[in-house]
Length: 122
Image 1 (cartoon, rainbow, N blue to C red):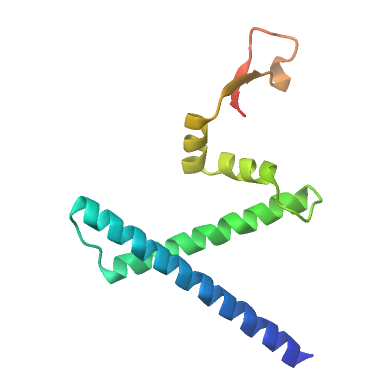
Image 2 (tube, rainbow, N blue to C red):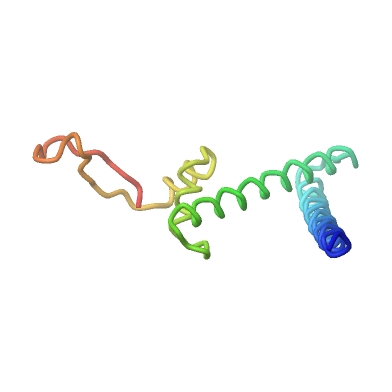
């Protein structure tokens, strides 16, 4: 029993290391492109720091998406979960508002008063 758990733990760790390596490689490629475009250099430590922050943020996004789906009593993440995540993240929310059409939606407090509507991105 313990051997099975240890094997699962080792597989999880190995998978995580492969994902980290893929993120690091991609960040390195992006930094090279920016460096060539802006005529600047990125140190290895800077690339590693950006990679680590990116990986941690992706872990947080994945955890949040999983929790949103679980809260809705679903086992599959769908677009509604992603929209909720985008609303929760200031940087993603700002991007989303720039690209999303704006519609009018009444809030509970103003139901019945058509003059007082709030703007909501959909």
